[in-house]
Image 1 (cartoon, helix red, strand yellow):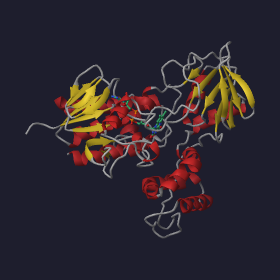
Image 2: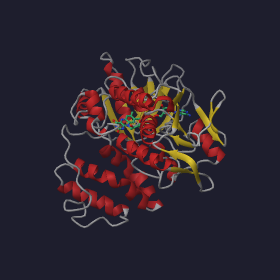
Image 3: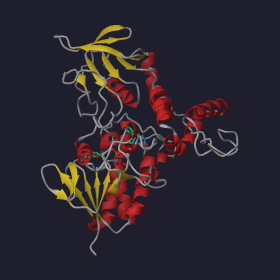
Image 4: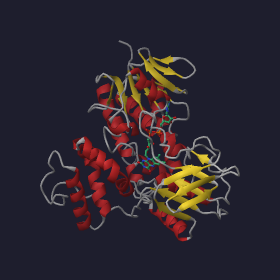
Amino acid sequence: MGRRTVAVVGGGCAGVLATRELLRCTDHRVVMIEPDEPGGGLAYGQARPWHLLNSRAGAMGADKDGFIGFARCGPDEFRPRQEYGAYLREVFATAAREGGDRLDLVKARATGVSDHGVALAGGGVIRADEIVVATGNPAAAQPVAVRDHPDYIADPWRPGVLDAIPSDVPVLLVGAGLTAVDVALTLTEDRHRDAPITAVSRRGQLPLTHTSVAAPPLELSGRAGLDGGAALPERVALRDVVRLVRASAARAGDWRAVVDGLRPHLDELWAAFTPDEQDAFLRHLARPWECHRHRMAPSIGARVGELLAEGRLEVRAGGIRSIEAPRAGGLLVELDAGVQWFGAVVNCAGPGRLPAAAGEFVAGLLRSGRARVGPHGLGLDIDAGGRLVGADGRTGNMWLIGPLRRGARWETTAVPEIRDQAAAVTIPIR
Ligand SMILES: Cc1cc2nc3c(=O)[nH]c(=O)nc-3n(C[C@H](O)[C@H](O)[C@H](O)COP(=O)(O)OP(=O)(O)OC[C@H]3O[C@@H](n4cnc5c(N)ncnc54)[C@H](O)[C@@H]3O)c2cc1C
C-alpha cells in the first residue's frame, strides 16, 4: 500500500504544530497548504517589536522547554511575539528537515474540499486521505455600521494601516481587549503622537495583568479545591461555578491562581452547561472572564498604566450610538457621552460569528455540507476526537484544530491547548 497523505490547511501556529506532530509520529506524507510563510499567522506574523506574548515562555514550547531553549530565557519571562514567530519557523524548518521528502509545502490558498481533495485558488487539487483544518480565527466582528470609509480600519492587522494614521488626529478604538492594547501600543510608539486615543467597549474593561512570578494554579478539586475538598461532580451549574470561583478568589492570595486552576476544566464545564447557561455566560460573563484569563504581560500592563495616567489613552464604557462620515473627513461618532470627531476609527473587536465571519475556505466547507456551524456560531462543530461534523451529523476524514473549535469547546485558542489538539488528532490519523 502506498503512503497515505495528510493535508494540513493553514500554516500558522496550529498548522506548524500539527505538521510537526504528524511527521514525528506517523509515516504519512504531509502536504501543508499555506499562502504565506509557515509560522506567521495573525498572532506572531503581524506582531511589532513592542508586542509581547501574553503567556510565559515556559508554556509556549512545541515540546517541554523548547521555546525557553530557543529564546535562551527563563520560564517566567514574557518574550516578544516576533521572537515566537521565529521559533515557530524554526520548529517548521526542523520538522521539514527531519521529515525529508515526506513534507511538501504548497504556497496557495485553499478554497474548499471536494471528493477529489483540497481545491486551491487558481486551480489544482491536493489529493489527501485525511485533512486537518487549521485556518485560524473567523474574520473579525464588524460592530460598526461603516464599511468602506478611508478613515475606518476594519482590520488593524493589515500591514501598514496603523502607520498611515496621522499622529495629530484623535483615534477611536472599538473594543478594549488585547487587540485594542496592541493597537494603542503601536500608535503611541510614535512618541510624537499628541492626539488622544479613546477605547470604547460595552464594559470599558481592559485586560488585567500577570504578576512577574506566577502563583501556582489552585486545583479545582482536592484539598485546596474550589469546592473545599470534594471531587467535582460531573456537571456543575453555571451559577455554582461562579459562586465557587468568587469564594475561592476571596480565599486565595491571588485570584490568578483560581483562574489558572480552572483552565484545564473549562472544556468539561462548558460542555456540561445547558444551552441557556452557555448563552448567559456569553452575554454576561465571557468578557470579564477573558479579562481575567487572557492577561497582559507585566511590562505591557505598566505601559498601558502610563498611557492612561498621561491622558494619552482613555477607556470608556458604553456603545456607539451612531456614526457619520462628514465631508471634511474623519468620522463623527455618537458615544454615550455625546458626539465626537475622530480622525480614524479602528475595529478592535474580537472574532465574528459564523456563518457570516467564515472566510472563503470555511464558507466552502459549510456550503458543501462537509462542516456545520457549531454552538452559538463561535466555530465549527466537532466530535469528541476533533473530527469535523458535517451537515448530516456524520464525520469523515476531516479534523479541526485551533480557534474554530470554540463553541464546541471553550479553551481552544492558546498555544498549550493547540499543542495538545495537534498531538491528539495525530493519534487516530496514525
Ligand atoms: C494578537 C494575538 C496574540 C496572541 N498571543 C498569544 C500568546 O501570547 N500566547 C498564547 O498562548 N496564545 C496567544 N494567542 C492565541 C493563539 O496563539 C493564536 O490564536 C494561534 O496563533 C492560533 O493559531 P492558528 O494556526 O489556528 O491561526 P493563525 O496563526 O491565524 O494561522 C492561520 C493560518 O492559516 C492560513 N490560512 C487561512 N485560510 C487559509 C486558506 N483558505 N488556505 C490556506 N491557508 C489558510 C493563514 O494564512 C495563517 O497562516 C494570540 C492570538 C492573537 C490573535
